Image (cartoon, rainbow, N blue to C red):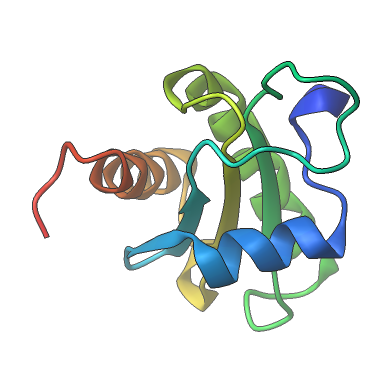
Amino acid sequence: MLPTENRLRRREDFATAVRRGRRAGRPLLVVHLRSGSTDPHAPGESASPARAGFVVSKAVGGSVVRNRVKRRLRHLMRDRLAALPPGSLVVVRALPGAGDADHTELARDLDAAVQRLLGGGAR
């Protein structure tokens, strides 16, 4: 589970990451990253930690499948947040194939998308 300070909760934060961030698509998911943006809701001048949110629609599957995909993505993202710049907003949107994918397939696609957004991968 992601710690509270690493979760995206506000609609505005999701919208900022999706509309103003960069996007990398993979067969199972799409990752939106808004690098190093300052959090207008955070008190003080310190840089906020990287935060992540997840979008898993009904196209992925029923409620059991959607929740399983969200749990897997949260677990995978927790280990990858340290690689992101402070203040980053990340939205991971699961595509319909994610419901049938196993943990390693999701991890492979998430790693590839994050690597591409951080400048380490080719288009």
